[in-house]
Length: 319
Image (cartoon, rainbow, N blue to C red; front, side):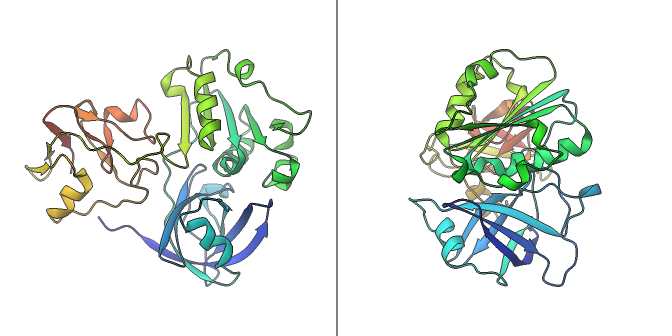
């Protein structure tokens, strides 16, 4: 399983806030880039050998066509190297390897109403979703939470005529406030909630929406909510239905590593169950799901192999 890699040129770098830079990425020869759907992300490989996932913050054109990708990168104070590399070492004109877009956080096509809640840099996937929904004439609201107007990324895009009527702001230092409990008190049939932001914000939203149906709440995390590595578990077997044999997985080993030892490469990226790169078809009821990227419905027939394990002695996957 070989993942496609692209090379892009950094066409423009813009300071959005004191902590956030936006990067426009173009094809080196001016061609169109692979299409995608709102909510998608890419892996970016940057100087220093780092690789990080960034959401695409601008909706594609008709049919998914796109001549530039837009991402936002927040300079983290406790950076492990990725955001520091993007802020300090990447310049306009540089060439960067990236993955083709992947989408584990899509707009729900059958939704009657869409409520988008963005905390800080978590606006990036939701901004693209809002632009897409506006073009579709859909019923939606984009609620943006930020410390102040100075810390409001992509502010110009939020004031665009097609988006402005749908945008609500919550500024910690201003009079504009949103009461999460009141906003999420009732769930109307057909309404879908999408949330992205830092851990504290995500926890607050999930708590306020705890009574919402599981399949009506869609989240994209920056890091594991547990803020720790995925714990080991008991040993089990992976049964590969298409190959007709089983692979043993040790108690301190991931399914991805066990398959690699047998010469079967599964693409991975975050290795925390966040990005969906390693998701494969499976008999979901046999899995102990530890991911944060699959919905309840998706877990019936998929599994994230970087972190999930078997409920009992065997996990059945369709590879």
